[in-house]
Image (cartoon, rainbow, N blue to C red):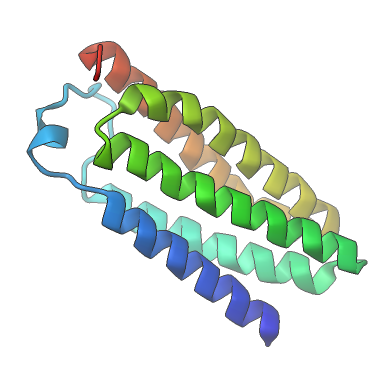
Length: 155
């Protein structure tokens, strides 16, 4: 039961903090976006699914972990990934710096890939559950870079 509580609370905390950083107000609405950008209503739906799968993957990997060290790696990578997820929202939305967020998102992609790899070493199913998260972060990165290209410079 402990892994379920930890994973659920961590996912909810990251989602809530990220949401408080996200402001779709006048500044964001004024940005030129590529034609392939998802509609604004898609983001909460996709992020909810991604966070639910991430929490489930964390529980699955934790329960299949072969050692305490494996659990420690999972928790550390999940914490780093959550921090980078929140930091991206802060840079992009709160500081209105998509250029900085475009650099930071590389670290977010790397931490997501590392989390997927470590989780998959414990449970193939856990790794598969993290694939939508990695794919979504990569879409977000492409969108971020297109927004910089279409609207820069910033600052």
